[in-house]
Amino acid sequence: MGQTHIWAKRPFFNDDLFAAVCLERGMNDDGYQQQLEQLKIEHRDLDDSIRALSAQTLIDQLQIARLKKKKLTLKDRIMRLEDQLVPDIIA
Image (tube, rainbow, N blue to C red):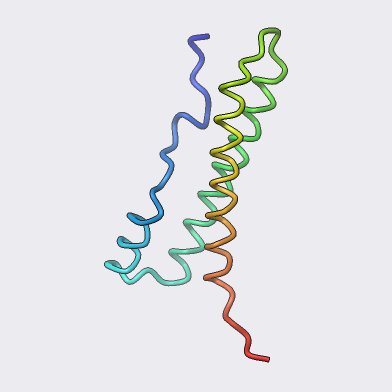
C-alpha cells in the first residue's frame, strides 16, 4: 500500500485561481492549449489509477469513487478550455 499513484504527483487546479492567473498573465491560445494538454494527461493518469485499483484483490471503493469524481471534474475543465479555444460562430 505504500505505492504512490501517478495522480497524487500532479496538483489539481482551482478554476477561480487559474482564471485569475490567466487574466493577469494575458494567457493566449498557446497557454490554454498547454493547460489543456496537462489536464488531458491528468485525466488519463486518473483512468490508469482507477483501472489499477479495480484490479487489486481488495478493492477500495471509496478511493475509486474519489478518483472518479476528480476525473469528472477534470473532464468538465477540459471541456471548458476546449470551448475557450474554439471561436464562437454566429450563424
